[in-house]
Length: 476
Image (cartoon, rainbow, N blue to C red; front, side):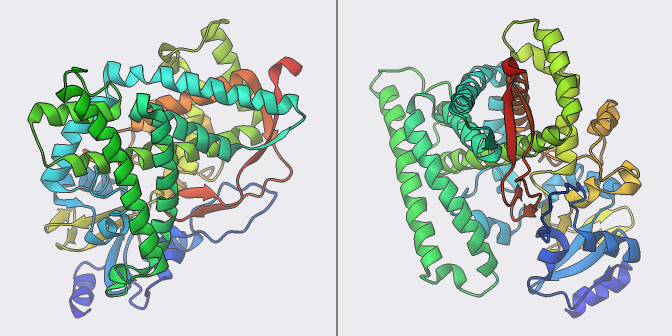
């Protein structure tokens, strides 16, 4: 405590030294839910904005016995995430909170482990390999659209679109990750969804000494689910390895899992099986949950701003001219790209970037000692009027007509620097395909039953879902 006080005084940092266990949730993470039929895009925590106005853009707060530095200066953030990416990473507490869910996969790895995993995983999300996934995305989306058309034919008009997006993105990641083992992949992802929710609840107890060893109901369920998930994953992995060993196949497959196994086989590594299972679980979280939320929030924004539906639809008709959507069209859908960027700005799925300093770091005039936790409040930065102007809390995709905003240091929905999201190309391609196909088939408006209640736990979710009214374009 005394060391932190001396550090705070030396660096002229302000801070609330009385802010204990759960106060940080009020400041940075959990938004107070005030639901309303009036949709307000100002979802950034009010308290952090007030602290920044009164006490500056950097301040110390406490989480239990751990001091944390909240950093909002984007020039320093850029330097930290780019220049010092190898000297910072995920803390022990973060790794403990997710070890049963995604383990030590790419999202939670540090140092040489992270570099090794990134080297293995990155080729799966580049160039022609990335484009090859578009077929899965189009096929799965067409099945969802057919399901919606069938429901409308039976008299249904209101849909909780978040449920559809969750099922669709799970379907897509199941096929891209497991291909021929698709059905077993769906079973694994169902268990992982339950495991994710249990792990999110259990993290609140991590500060209590020995809590992770206590045989509580949560801990028993988590360990049981983890064992079952890894058993199913090992069945798929072993069956593919057996096929290669007996000569039935020369490859472990062309899907994401096959790529990881081929890499392990080439390197003749026997110690990477747990890493491969952890990567499979990481793909699920990063490629399913966050993309589903991006789609859900974007559809909500389009439902409340139908003019942008018309603009996107007009560009789609001009580009496709009656032909089927293909991956080559996506980069030319500028109106859709602008809407997606604005959605990511207003409702970033990951509203916070936490880092731990592994060595002493100097950012401009700011000294960060080894062991200090750094929190980057992406949500607050994305809603800053100083950065984005007086309309920062309004839906205005035209701000992204210039590429400088999307490429600037102020916009970080996928983090920044070497540790940025390796699957961002996959997520954006998936989102563009799904939204383009949906808009080409349907017109939609927000339902009177929709209650606007953004809630941040691990990601930003609509607490009560997003209800929309769908109407086929053929009926208009």
